[in-house]
Length: 444
RNA sequence: GGCGACGUGGCGAAGUGGCUAACGCAGUGGUUUGCAAAACCUCCAUUCAUGGGUUCGAAUCCCAUCGUCGCCUCCA
Image 1 (cartoon, rainbow, N blue to C red):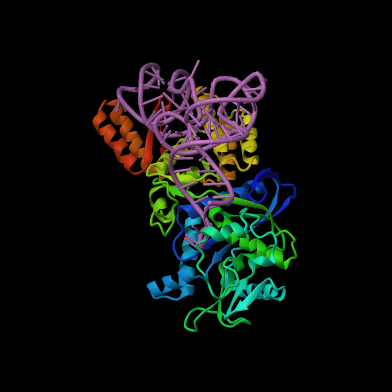
Image 2: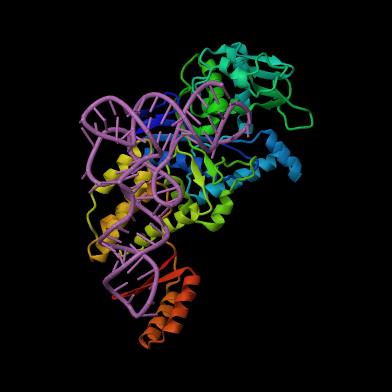
């Protein structure tokens, strides 16, 4: 299994069998949009595939539940910040469950790891990597000689075009807050430096250390987090551990764009909630749409893209409902599938293999050959990619009586009424399939 | 200004030195059907932004040009 490492800009082989993986989660001030789904599904598939290949994976994904945006939301909704966080953590899980995302092994929250965060900051101050200024604490980026190694930028270059506003409390404009002084009437915690709230970057460093240890194997997140978020995580953690590497391999997913070519984001007002998408399309369709492009490429969400994915997934579903008593031999498909996945999670090629298998199954079926092994293999691949293929429950009796009635009408050549029944069933999501062996049906 | 990504058929999207350029959607002609749907069989890019170069050989490597986008501020 090889993966592209943002840190080295190379594909690298995963050698160790035990994988500690940390994925940056969301700030819970609103419902997740499809960009969050794209990232979360990507790391869900990575987790599943690694396990399938025999790796022992521990995945941790955090919730940022202390943040100015949460506080603003709480004022807007006139509920507490805790309630805002709780509400949107719940909706995150609901939406991701619907997409078939498995829970991480640990979902830590900043508020629950406050003790470790404060200790971490204290440690940095002790090492003189951070300083207290006017009730806040800042990291001193000049402490580290290799600050910028992930995003490949150096501080001198930054100064010219920087948009960072001059902050009198900082020694250097690139320094970033570890702890921010907060007013008495807002959410705050006690610390050796006074009441306040943690900065954003520090929570991930503290959580990684607490839940996974000093060095982790894979650190993931969206491409937009490379700078400054992940860069800052690295410098904080490696300052504490004395240069011991923080994360060996960095995996970043490409960002989701809308058809106007702009990135989808809340601030641009062009975001598309997962929940809205789920009201129109199945979780499987959304997952297929995500996996049909490579995770490192930017994806574009057009008006039609989910609709097309829905139709595409139906082609797979139709095969799953074929009579599986029969069987046929398919040997090279799994090899193709694994080869695609082994190379930096090549889900588009893996899915192309799935469609080729679907075609092969249909072909065999139309020639009255065995399809059993083909369907078993197809199900195996779909499960590895996290699709939900549990059988739907059908009310057989009611449907069969309508089908029998229709066939009666057909034999009387009363096609108008026969077609009405077909229409009626179609509206209920039941599709009729006539063949010379009789009439069958399936859910659509 | 600095760092980075990308430009492949009507649309989406793989492939990154060598078989006839995957796969999905849409479309074409057929088989099948009472008609459909589905499925199957056909066809649908002599060509991979443009112009040079390297090579026996390039969509794939190099250079230039044009274009699009991301990060540098909260962001998956």
